[in-house]
Length: 330
Image 1 (cartoon, helix red, strand yellow):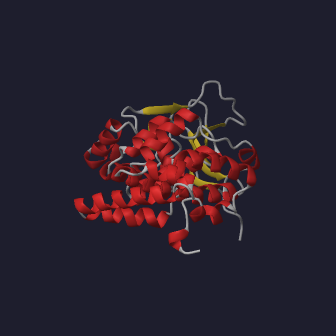
Image 2 (cartoon, rainbow, N blue to C red; image 1 turned 135 degrees about the horizontal axis):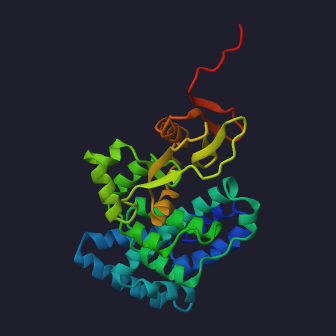
Image 3 (cartoon, rainbow, N blue to C red; image 1 turned 45 degrees about the vertical axis):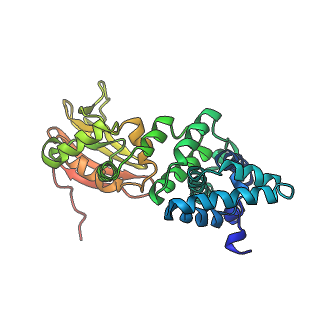
């Protein structure tokens, strides 16, 4: 089959075949809402028509006239094509449906990757199509996603919502649609420093470029502008005159601090908002090992005994000790 003969659905059929059946059925229902009648229109034809529209005003008129003629000629043979073409007769409609197809293709790839690499069995069995209200809003934003960057982000959002219902709020869908490149760059930089829902509140965020970035992200609704602190809980029992506290944790990593009685340290951080965290889930995972290591070394050391970095399945890493540990004899 040539590219020109492939439809919005057949373009992704190979991807769909690799998706577990429960998720595949759910995702196809979501695609039918996203694409509508466009599932019967050749994807290559959309690109061809869209190119003509961008050339000249005259071309726009010719394309519309030609498409209208085609609808009339094929109505009796292909009612579904008639329905889909009627949906996109105007130039803006062509562009929007083309964008929806691109988002659907990206979503299919992310659903396949997520269902085979990340989603557990429970998420596969409980996969549900997004709620109608959520999907209606999503389609309106997705059809305006003209850049590859936005199409990929919306594809990730739809995939995440299918695999893990409720992962992305409508506020996040709206925020992604309004995210300009400068704010996106600010957020990518901040998210790379994530230490478990927030960034270590170092001098960087208190002045200069870091302070300006923090203010921009606050105004965009992606980061809190006030310091948050995590304190040692009261009444922590001591074992052999030492208490244990986990002030920082992210993913499978955690910082473990052993302290003497009277320790009064805390961890200060700037938290990401819910929208910020949901957008962060669309990006590459931060280097939590390095971020937690830096946060740990900034903790108060008075009356601390040792600070460790733990990760499930790996040996503990000693980050700091009040007194040098005794080395084994050679």
